[in-house]
Image (cartoon, rainbow over all chains, first blue to last red; front, side, top):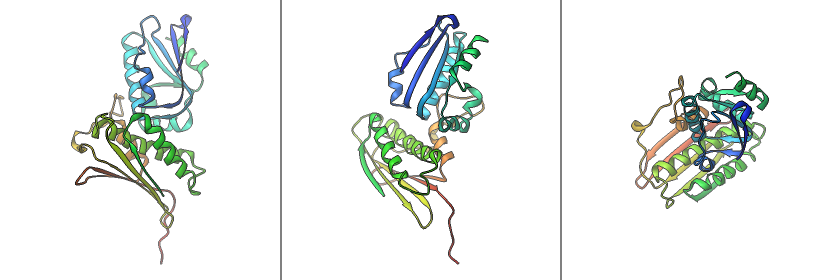
Length: 110
Length: 142
């Protein structure tokens, strides 16, 4: 996982790659959103596999950032992953964009 | 056909997934359908995750046996997954709230959505999950 801070947007961008699942979530255990960077963008264009544990983590993160007046935007979903989000209807609950630029523009609206 | 027995550990889920994927990619009926391969790989991953987290409660001492076979006459994929951990209780299962989004309960829901059949039975010594996916048309002999 790589991270980039964008202070102008009070945004932290997390770049994930490969499998985003119950095993890879271990590396995110120590990471928490904070009030100084309450807007989170998950950049998943290099993620080729998402499981239910990752879906649950994203739902939990979405609630956590709402509690600190922030937001979660997920961008760059590969089609098989997008379809799983549609299957679980999380595409209606989570904020999704195709590109990182669109995600940043969305953050700018908050 | 694929037969594997593997330690029930979270870090080995990727090995299970890649073994299943490699087998699926040898099937002409499915090799050009990446979404189908993804869905089946995800279904096996979810069942194995449940086994590791619930049947074995992360004790790293159990094992999982997986048998994957394709019946070309009926175009049916059958995956049998066995473990020797605690039983699964369907009545304790949490169902996802699809309207509001909740933090769990998606695993078995996804499996049921992407397969044609999911069966569970408790055996004398453990658990048996059977996953069935129809990969193409079936032809009845007249």
